[in-house]
Length: 143
Picture 1 (cartoon, rainbow, N blue to C red):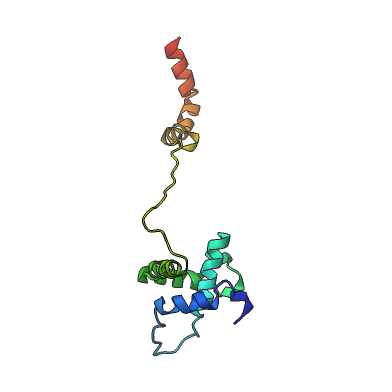
Picture 2 (cartoon, rainbow, N blue to C red; picture 1 turned 120 degrees about the vertical axis):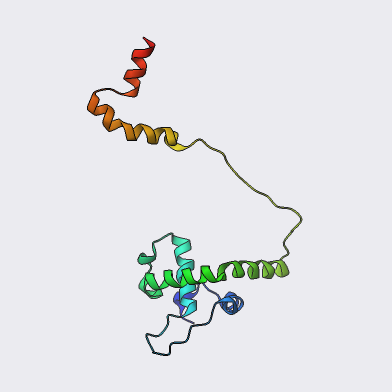
């Protein structure tokens, strides 16, 4: 196996390859298809780095090809099936304690005031043209 695709170990690949749709027939020929393993390595690379599809290194093929195959796999439910398969595998190897779960959440105020700030930015040019501002108008009412 090519060392560039070591992010997809053989054991993992053997488990997920049956879940990937087969290549559609090409009765009129066409370019050779980029391997599914290379595409999966590109998807893992993108998840790890957060880069854009078009910024993928050339070793993975074109970013548009990787994105197109990713979209096809999402539509076909490949990643849901992979997740289920890998959970089953982990459960057999280590055991998942299905009788409990934990969830973490945080509730925080919207940065910069949220919707109120958006309204202020929208009306700021009109107020600047009139020579008034919300704080000036509010200050004159209270005085």
